[in-house]
Image: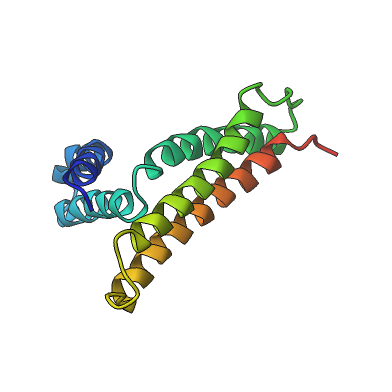
Length: 151
């Protein structure tokens, strides 16, 4: 884990947690929830690496479009064709997931000789690498659903 990755994680966690912190006075115990949200986001950036940041942006865009289309269908209104940015976003989510997996695997194995290989850190690195693919495929699946034409 590099200092830069940690700083990015903390900065993004702060931005994510800011609205929660602003509401902290509204209910007792809200501060603890805000700290958990910010800590979880920082941990996600550190665990998956820099790939999490564009994945998060793609997820937000695709999920908001999915919600909009779901509400439009429920209201019985006519769906417009999906926006032109959706196809590249779906492909980018898949490729970012694979890139994160490769990056995580390299991070897990780089500079380690077979004699120095310890299973704990290696399993952690491979788990983070696979989470990157999981997130990428999950985002892409939602995008494929959004892209589908109504029957």
